[in-house]
Image (cartoon, rainbow, N blue to C red; front, side, top):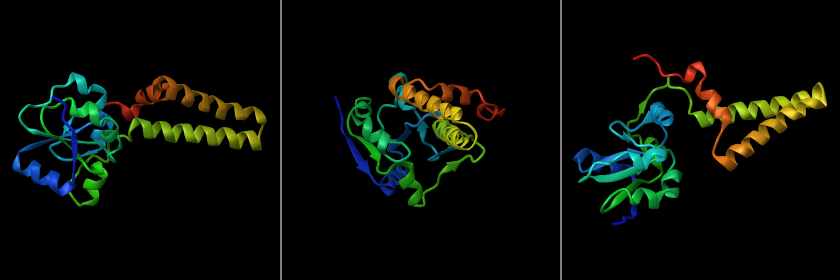
Length: 175
């Protein structure tokens, strides 16, 4: 049976969680979840959704950071549950704006894609500045990064993200 995703406000989700009727499923990637999440939420990344069984008998409420990811995957999410399924309207951003508690680990590294955006943007800016101020050959750096981003978008493989995952600050910390 395919369900539909019904939107719930943060207050409605909190009430369902407090009553024990619902399970909050955070579909963001593990690095995003580690940085901040609703206390008690289960981390089931969208990329592994089909491989992780969801608990039966409870209402499923799906969330992401802003609600865009859940909206884009609503058919896939709804297919994972029998009966009604819900989405936290506005995602974690709305939960936080409503003043509801978040588990935040400020020591967790920034999400990999944010690191990619910072690194790629910095390299493009550096290439353009050096191209203007030092030598036109430095424009090739900006072109190389642009080509890499285009390749990543077309194939789903981001070499810069893979490299950043190996950086010391992105390695798991000892418990």
